[in-house]
Amino acid sequence: MSTPSAEVVFGGTFDPVHEGHLTITRALVCQLGVLVRMLPAYLPGHRGACDVSPEHRLAMLELATKDMSHVVIDRFEYEAGRSVPTIEVLQHLRQARSPRTPIFFVLGEDALADLPNWVDSEHLLGLAHFLVVPRAGLSGQAGGSVARYPQLQKIEDNMIPSGGIYRLEFDAIDVSATRVRAQLSNHEPVRDLPFEVQAYISQHKLYQGDEAGRP
Ligand code: ATP
Image (cartoon, rainbow, N blue to C red):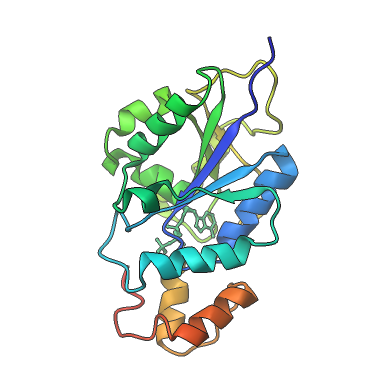
């Protein structure tokens, strides 16, 4: 019996979506040949309220991915209209798929370091694999942690559905949404935004406030 095709979930606040996110997504599609399910958070789970509405963040994500044929945007949190813990997202996905479907939850190494603070984090690996991506510019405990995990080069036919931690090998871009928001707020040039997103931000005058760079 062959393994049902894998689900690859890439969640984030995408406030705003930037080239760091898109580079990861392209690497997932090109290297693994998978469909990537991008899952925008309705509200930021780990920091204060976003300055920009959930609808604006979603619109920017839609613009940035509109020509990416192997990307779907999963509006699960938007339909719920609330912040949904990752454990709940994965439970929902697991119920909707065959128990044999491998599910990969993609996260940056900074997010991996923060995992103990997530709701029911000890149960996440029971539902999915983690696929960790390196993050440029990290130091200390959060940085350099990815190398210890085996590289995921292809999704094997007999792959188990969950429980592993893998890394994706690719050249990470040193960009964060926090830095992008701060640059926009200070009216500095921003390099790492897709053109359509930059245009949308200008059109709607987003991230102009003093609070825009707040971590
Ligand atoms: P913020 O600075 O507001 O925290 P962010 O740039 O980290 O935002 P998120 O939307 O929070 O963006 O990130 C979603 C996921 O993408 C997280 O797992 C994060 O670690 C990862 N990620 C974001 N940017 C990069 C990057 N440049 N390289 C590698 N991983 C990244």
